[in-house]
Length: 410
Image (cartoon, one colour):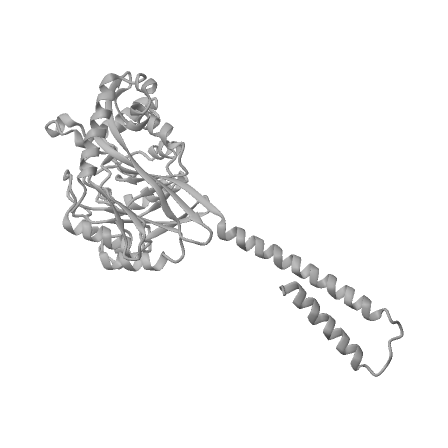
């Protein structure tokens, strides 16, 4: 006997009982029939409402949400990059768009794009490159136009132009409608939550080193302006948010510069972060790529770790590094994530795309431009549209990066 029949039977029995118990005969013999008919109609309506709610609940449990994410490495605007942008901008503004035009074309197919902001923007100081980076805030016009949604700001160049520079960098990023995580103007802010196609993603950013400028953080308030790489704190931060979101990404700025292999402590910490609740760990800082690994957490989740993505844009060239092409190469990481019903999101598929910062010369000066290898290596017609030298570098990068990735970690 289903729920509907049970309800009707109960109502009829109740009405019969009430009529039988009354001391006065009914003035109209059809009153009970009408009451029964009305009761049946009420139960029908109630049953329809419950059925509709059940269908909605069932639909929500099966509803699928998907998002296509893209992650990039270090943005390092050395002075030649700033100089070209000024020339291209007509000596009135800084226009960095030529540096990012190929990236922009590639990134348009993604729902979310995040890169590392390894420079400061302090309008009260002269522009500068290595070792203390200070760029024009106009760079964010090009980054926003390229499709960047989030800049991670916890890195060893966060204090390049002091506390004021840290704050003005945040202001510049926010004024161009880009989110940021890793530094803050007042209180400790370990993560931000971004909703992408209905999937809530928590993003963390931590810095291991501040290039010896730690002394600038000389009060408790200032100490909280930069998120530092501290395992216990990271564990607490992830624990705080993991039940509020569907997916977690951690961007640690760590490791040894120009090393193609992570340190033992990095491997241990990266795996710990997956065990604590992270889904992806994406490292930066070495300016060269390092291996990746798929790691299964203690609770059976699939996590992905990239120890370093290398440079996404810089002026570092092989000829200045004794022919070391690694400094010109980088990775973009693609992650297609899926959330079904009320479950957490998981990584449906993931891959990497090799990049190269190529150098060319035109009427504006020396252009450092980032190319993504995949479209050119998978499409011969597209490959014929670029210089043979650039195509050679893209093939070389993909071969070298594949070898590094396949070496894995112990």
